[in-house]
Length: 142
Image (cartoon, helix red, strand yellow):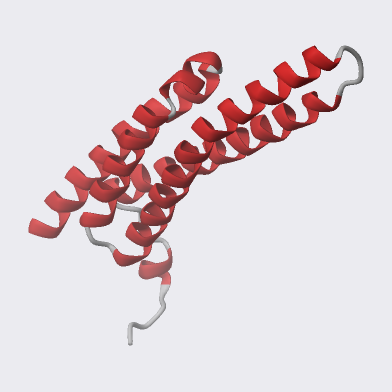
């Protein structure tokens, strides 16, 4: 068991830790925005008026939800691997997270093009995942 003293408490974070924390925070931000977009999308269907318009909105909601569901499930899985990597101090969870996030980008590309803020957040998350893997691998070798 390590002793806690001023050196261990004030020890600066390693470079891969900083990248991993930024990647995790951006992942959580992306998830929050994604869930709020889904909530806003579902609340727009309940508008009264023309039955054909309501049916069209419901059809659009179903198509968007099916695309968003795959993206959301994969992205949550990638975020879980980011958290695991942060606590394990191993490089493989970051690589797994980055690969899963890349696949979720492919699955949700049509939705992400409709809401560019999600794409602006997702691209750095993927890049930072690969960077965290690279830095963790270098740090473990050293």
